[in-house]
Image 1: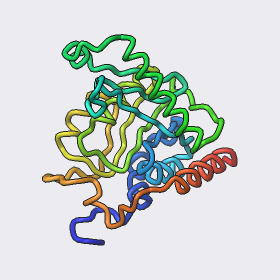
Image 2: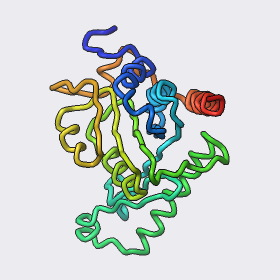
Image 3: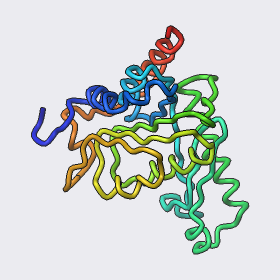
Image 4: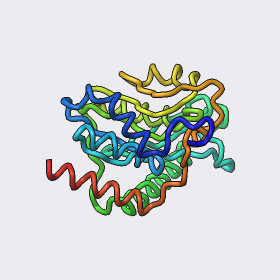
Length: 222
């Protein structure tokens, strides 16, 4: 491995992460991967736990005229959930009609991406499930925070966030958003997620589709 790298690649990190999650194997967990980089990690977790694997899309809702500034997010699922930054909404005086239109636009994009990866298969319901959210790492934690808040609205029985690597401050901030947080490494200083992998090659669409199909086949054979 290169100097400073903690994991050879995402699949190897996923195998290590799975070992720290084996206590959840008997709880019929549902593993949700944040695409695309979280999918190879989540595949290894789902395989080791004998769990179902699905994707979790999170799309930022941009402010009027300033799409890079988030006023909230929409979280994918059988029942998509809206997470709104009320302070930002008030500060910018965002019209409710704009919010509805932006929500519709982002839900359409989520549906387009989901169809590209899993076809017509709908998202798996989260209510009453043990849900494990997996990514390849956390930088600022903004996307994951929105994801966890959205999932909470679907009333899972137990919510877990599992990542190979994240900065200590992000871990501290995210603990209150889930029932259990598993992070293998919390380097300080942190720099970037990719700095802790020897191979951090971008995960392609073909790999996402292949791993989801393989996980689904394993689940049907179990």
